[in-house]
Length: 194
Image (cartoon, rainbow, N blue to C red; front, side):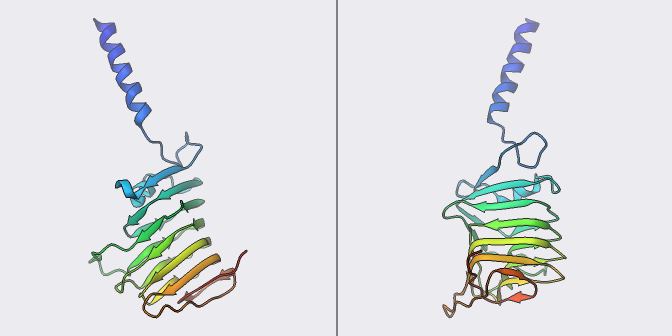
């Protein structure tokens, strides 16, 4: 009887293990993790489970309607699969902080690739990069919304852009700057190929 009980427990644990999702950045993970926002998964929830100082790749599907926080990461890649979107939620936070759809703070060697980023009028910017973040790479992005800035770089941070288009949704205006490392604020940008 004791053997049957132990075998049942082992079979149950094996079944749970088969359905478990290992998060990139843990010691036993070799490949990227996929977040499907259209199925109710959260990009922030996934980021909160990563080891911040281990290289990690997160593939994103669908529309993520959340304020995405990339804080204190090293070697992180967020790769949007075709159609991936970061959308500002309809309810704004009440903590008095700046509203940014994607905030990158105190991070280095971070790549954001393949997203459309949409803000509402209450956002200061679509993408904010600050707190001395360095080696931030923005690639293949479309950024739009009526916020004050499409991309805002502050507090000694450095970012490089390639194939980034920022549009002012209120005017339809598209402005450009070549690829390269930038510091300071960027209201609207269309970058050239690398």
